[in-house]
Image (cartoon, rainbow, N blue to C red; front, side, top):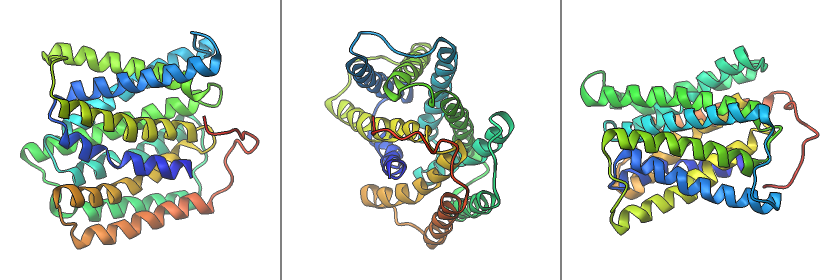
Length: 292
């Protein structure tokens, strides 16, 4: 249920970014900085002290997760200026392919038959949805490549989370991750010469919406679910995002989905249900706690 809510919230990212008239690095910086402040406040309240409770050996992994989250945001937000929301969302959600492979190599996570079938169906659905939208030249090609690279960075980010989250409470972990990612994006903004202020009230409104929905409800709840669900299954569930993002793009920008969107959407949902419902139980059956 938590993973489902996270995917729904995360699917709003592309539309909200398109609606925000600010540079990509600035959007990412403020989005992560404000979210990090919220998570830090939650950590201090839960810890009953102005400190973060995180094992020393997990600090490097958390900082690296923040670095790759920052790289993911930098390439993801930038790609939306070059290609369509549909193409960008589809390509960035190839991250389950990277997560499955990297999780098998580095975390020794088992990949079962139904996972492979579900992954293949979901990937086929993503290809069908993209249809003639994917172009191999000009700015569309650049945007497509940035979206693919963004998916790869997101996969590494989730794998670091899988390594750390079983031992670290969510608020403590995300405070470091969001803080490190915001610092990285702020550095990129300085290098690019992007001003940090002033901006119009509409910019701050859309940034606030991004903080609430795709960040706090999307990214944070995805990380919460990593404590109980294997990394490649969390990544695979994200294949639903292109379907929801296409619906939202239609409602906001009046982008009418093609028939391929419906066909691909059925394949994606089928693939997700196969993978989530047919495999063996995850490795943490005794870890049950309230939502943080």
